[in-house]
Every structure is written in structure tokens, then in C-alpha cells.
Image (cartoon, rainbow, N blue to C red; front, side, top):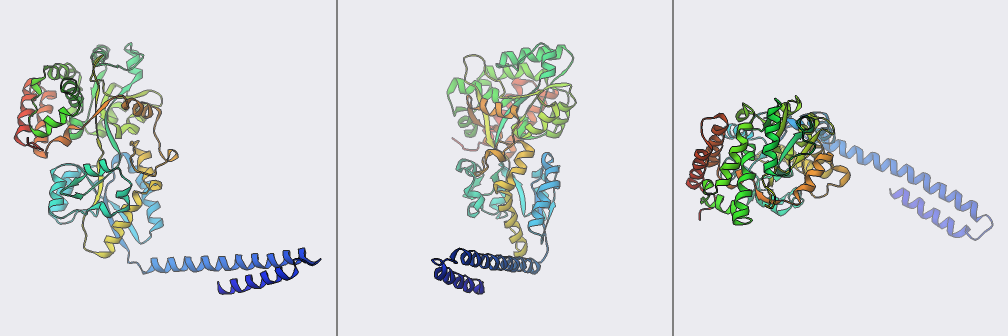
Length: 455
């Protein structure tokens, strides 16, 4: 590089001497060619030196296998075909190993924690499993990461326990209802229902035509709540005002049966649930909607790409669950999606690989692959419109959420044990082992026995 600057200086001296002579133009052109030629040569040399330095640095790195437990089945193909090979091409000393896909993440992580072998990068959730991990010092505080600064505060607060931010969310989560419009039209419905009474009438018409009416992933606690929680929040919200549902729920004072409309409305749709919904997973729901015989699915917006693709291009409608009737405020459950966090590791080489990948996956140009595959509603700063892929149906849903009043998803308002007890009671209703009123009593008692924020 010193040689380049010396030649450049000499050329500039030539230019200054000849610029005013008759031969100035030719001299300037000649000198410029010299400068350009040397610059190109030196640039190539410099680039070669940088490349050699990078290769040397990589060569000095000890190869490491980094286990990650973040992959969901709905972006497995994107992981295998794009995310994993792209990262490993950029960091050839790091091999990514996907672990725990298809398993219940909480149970999988508990087993790994018992063996003192949590995956260095892992999915995290709200609930006592991950709060216990924080209290045991097993998870890193993410507040010092670059990724943390690119997630809105309300979403980082949602994954903060005892002042430790243990997870960064994948996006905004909402309850939604998906319709197969081919079935609805065959049953006389040109548009999706807009009110709760219309929903019940539509369900009756669908059943009369011999179709399965609605399904949901009853095996998962998050989605087990969905057919009931919007009804409960809408009824209580219209009686007591915004925020009352969560306050009573978290305080352990909620009495579902004190609001008869909850039992009345939920009781009207329970008989239309498909047989076996209590054991259905989100993948089962996608498969059921894809087979073209079920008219509706109550599911999280994070499964929108899979369900809408399964239903067929232009045939699926994604809407806010119509829990309200005319003249009522519609309440919509909203929450951060499951998040990604890091477990503590002792090995420095593994720790470096963990930190590199965590920051890498939360850069917009890389996180977009997950968003594109899943159809999540993103909250990560820096994701531009051209990076975000949402179907027209999902875009219509986003617009519809703007006219609803949000409330915190019910599983976020209770502790793990009471949440499990509530879900068991709800599953018993769908299986016929418990009536609606008895279920709501059990749920109220379970929440009162273990309030999240005692009053």
C-alpha cells in the first residue's frame, strides 16, 4: 500500500507540471492510467491479504458443534435448505445441530437440564419451567446482546424474570380463526361470520352439510385456551372494562361462572368441536385443514402460512375470532410468541459459537427466513417490507386486529400448575367428561389456589 501512495504522489506531481502545456491532456490521461493500474493491482493485493487473514483466522479456530433447540416443524425445510447452510458457509468452523424438533420443548429442556446439558441456543417460553431455569442460573441474561436492542420493550419485559431477560420473541402472537371458504360457500355462506351469533349459525349449517366443523390444538396449553379465552375476555371486558380480565385472572379473584354469558357462549360451540381435538397438535390441525373436510380451525397466527397453504391459494380466510355480538367491543388475545434464549456454557469456544449464532439469527437479513416460512407478525426492528412475507389473508387479519381491544393470552396470566389444571378441565369438556359450568368452577378454583399476582 505504501508503494501505491508513492506512485500516486508522483503521478499528481506530473499532472501539476503538465496540465497547462499543449501535451497536458495526453499526460493527464497517461498518468491517470498509471494510477488506475496501480490502484487495481494494490486493491487486488490488499483483498488477497484480507482473505488470507480471514482464512488463517478460521483455520486457527477449533471446529465446534453447536446444538440449537429452536427449530419448529413449520420452518424445518427453511432450516435445512437455507438457514443452516448459509450460516455454516459464513462460519465454517461451526456446525449447527438441530435438537428437540417435534418434541414438547418444555419436557425436552427439563430432561436436558436434569443432565446439566441444556442446548446452548434454545427456545424459551413464559412459565415456571423457564423461570426455574433462570432462578437456577442456567440461562443467560440477554440484555447485553445487540439483538435485545432491536426488540420492543414490551416484548422483552414479557420474557424478563427476576430482572433477567431470558428470551427474545419471534414475533407478535394472536388468536385467529381460519375458514375454508369452499366449505362455507357450499353451506350458503359467501362471507365469514362477523359476530358470535353468526358463528354459531354458520357452525350449525356446516354440520348439517356433513362436514367437520372446527378443530384446534388441544394438546398444547397455549392453543387449548383459544376457543374459550376470547369469549371470556369479551364478556368480562364489556362488563368490567379493559384490563379487568387480566387483573382478576392474575390476582386469583376471577370467577368465570359469575358471568353466565361465558358458559352460555362457550357451551354453544363446544358440541361442534371435532372428535379428538384434545390430543391434536398444531401439525394435526394443519393436516386436518389440508384434507379439505373441516370448515374452521382456531389457531395462532404463527401457523398462518401452513394452514392457509394447506387450505389452498385464495380459498382460506384468516380472521379475528368473532366472540362479540353487535354493539359489543371485541377482545383479541395477544402476546409475544415463543422466544429464543441462550443457556450458560463453560467452554469458551462453544460460548463464542453460541453468541455468534444468536446475534446472527436475530439480524433482519437472517431472521426473515423464519418469518417467511412461518408467516409470523414480526416485531424485530430493521425488517423492511421487502423482507416480510405475509399472505393477503394474513394482511387482512392484521388490519382487522386494529379494531379489536387486545388482552394478554390466558396462559400468560397463570402459573404452570394451575394452567395445566385449567387445560385438563377444558379437555374434559370436549371429551364429554365434564360439563361447562363444572369446568369453569374448577378453573376458577385452580387459579385462586395459585394466583400469579395475589391481591
